[in-house]
Image 1 (cartoon, rainbow, N blue to C red):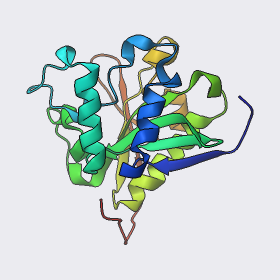
Image 2: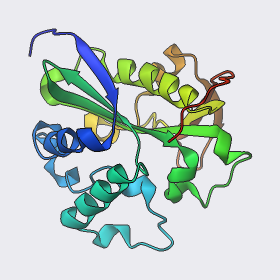
Image 3: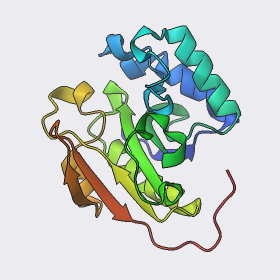
Image 4: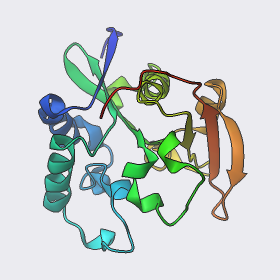
Length: 199
């Protein structure tokens, strides 16, 4: 793929077909065993849902409903009209898998999870562009800080889907804490925005 300009747009009901086409096309062409997720893992409360028993069809249906109801958020990167990247970035209150890890003022926090770049488009800085756009998008919603959870021990592109620690540090994130599994929570203040958009 050539170095055509990248455009980034928020996920919305009118971009649902683009999201589905990407997830069912090149996105997991080098990692098919993860193709059933449709990025629903962190939207589910795992104390109520047996995630490992969920099928691709069930996750697809859940994604479709959440997108239609603005209960799923993220950003799509386009090149020449085709989706080449995805970043799951949403207010923390939407990500019920994190409900068991309470934080102060969750309604003021955005969380960035899961980067997915098409194999043919890797190495072009798309994940970094998505990260910067995600910070701006969350700030526009009136959120005051953003968090992420990179895994320094990740091996390969698939395991590194939370994004590399170096990318966050280059974007102005700082390390906040280290979990028992070795993953690192990083965060960044977004500053004040007096005119949040409605979601």
